[in-house]
Amino acid sequence: MVREERQTMKREIQYRWRVREHMARVGMKNSRDLVEPLRDRGITLSESQIYRIVGQEPERIAFSVLVALCDIFGIEAGDLVTYTATDASRRRDKRAVNSTRDVPLLDAYRPVRARITDDDA
Figure 1 (spheres, helix red, strand yellow):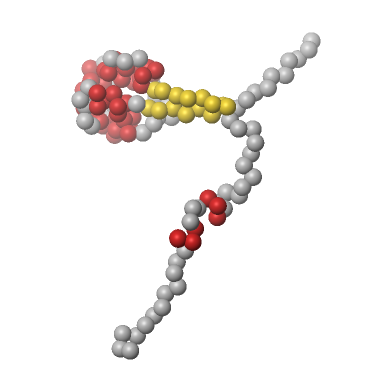
Figure 2: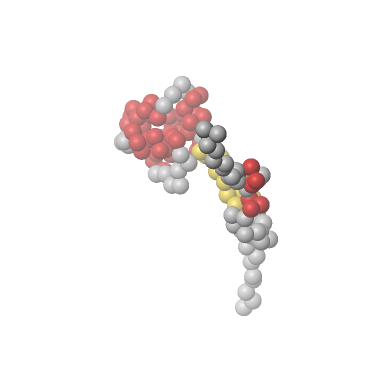
């Protein structure tokens, strides 16, 4: 039995959570506007939970909430979350983290030596 070796390329996945855009399209101005439409669909969340759903890109979300949001806006799940996946670079960056090259124009951030003068002179 010959075992096939698979080369696995690491993938970088980035996504964009577009709830706020769809809220604007239907005339919703803040996260509180979602409380009633979600309740109508059997989703009971606190205002702070809804605020986090609207204002942040969630790491995980209940499927029922995702489907309810799609129903509220009349869209597909792919319209609510868009993503890109690219191959990660194989070479590693050999620079030290937080090196002086990371800060542009470092001299502009350095303090200037103060001179204390006597007002009476």
